Amino acid sequence: MSTTEDLAESAALLGFIGLPYIKYYYIFLFFVYIVSVLGNTAVMAVIYLDHKLRTPKYVAVFNLALSDLLGSTSLLPKVLDIFLFNHYYISYNDCMAFLFFCFTFLAMQAFNLVALSYDRLMAIMFPLHYQTKVTNRKMLSFIAIFWMFVVISFLIVVGLLSRLSFCRSVVINSYFCDHAPLFVLACNDNFPSIVTGFLLPSLILWFPFAIILSSYLCIGYTLSKVASVQERLKAFKTCTAHLSLVGIYFIPSILIFGVAVKMPQNARIISLSLASIFPPILNPIIYVLQTHEIKVSIKKIFKRWKSNNMVN
Image 1 (tube, helix red, strand yellow):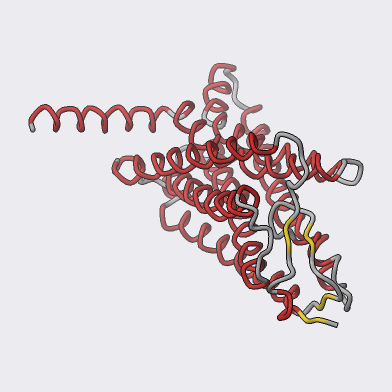
Image 2 (cartoon, helix red, strand yellow):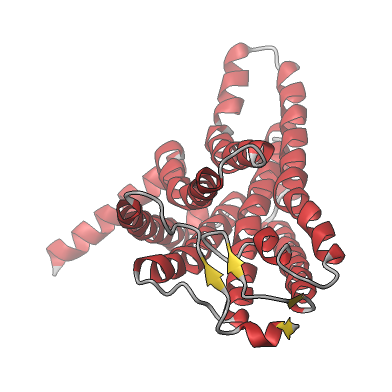
């Protein structure tokens, strides 16, 4: 029996191998990565440069853009290197690092949406006391707790995987070092990893989604007490950007996990890859298009840059 330390030359990722016209998909992935990097960097730069945007809401938006940027960078360049340049074999330590960073940033995207839902809940339920109930310090505390929770959770996941042994070469039927396709290949007791395999969707999907859904039920109940329909629509409009992000992140993943058993392997791999790459590219676009403050800040920055160029 070979241990995990002996797998450095035998772990292989076979996720996209054999799919027709797959090289066009790699071009698409490269395009998605470039747009994701530019878009999320632009959002972070605008928030950093405009002091008026240094509010609790935009602290959470900044962290969402950061986790989107880190998530895309941890996943897409490695995927392109593996499949575009035929570097299918990956060392065990690299595989564990690949798994840890991909899952950590993917989960953090969900918890950032939880932080934004808290901001919207307080803004609508307690509009007169919003500035005292939601402060930068409180939002940063929430974000720090979420980071600690996610990092510790996936360190445990990696720790459980590190105790596994494999009787044969490890061929991972996924486009990255996915958790379930890896631990099912173990030939010693993998029951702790099986348990964490059931808990992972709850950690990444169901728990954050339940919190967000509960917050919007409270928002809906609060708005139902507002007499004017115009006031309801005005208050609800402040949630449209966040609701768009929630739909983009959660709906595809929930549908995929709900029918994953019935889906062909190749369809599942493509669907999961699309579900993981679209939020980082769409999130900055949605916030730029649907958020008045960011659009105003971008115009101010361009005017300042233009006037500086004219002076020079």
